[in-house]
Length: 202
Image (cartoon, rainbow, N blue to C red; front, side, top):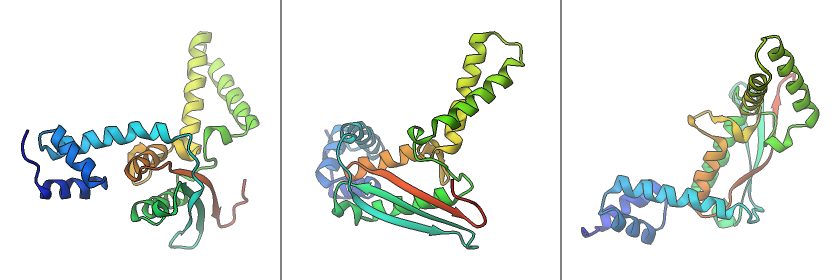
């Protein structure tokens, strides 16, 4: 095992935001390879997010975003477990990013799948079934088509399912999980409202 220098630990900490001792251990495990240590910490962090899912997150902050032409505005509440984390740059940046995403043309209508009203889902299911029936395909294929279209509907309209506007390789849910892994607490969006000039709220 190679000797780990303070510079390597500092570099890894700057890249990941993880504590010094965890950085040192990750570097020791990967033989001083910073890139491998980043990946190792990422895997460990994301794995630990699932364990935090049941914890209570009632701290955090309400953030806002007003589009430069003053036609779109957003209020969003993002929660964590302690006010210490709520005051970190990482968490504040997350709240800003989520508010910006909601204000973007992605324009999510609901926070999670569970928030989509049953009548809205029923309407779209019936619509997709009617469209697929006209294709003459077998029933089992039609079912797959309908489920695929409902999945696409969720990705288009549900905040947690949407690709993040600043990095479409990850969803908003994955963005929250990444920050949760870095700060070591449960992180969640609790609610949001999006105002667009001239539009009625849902």
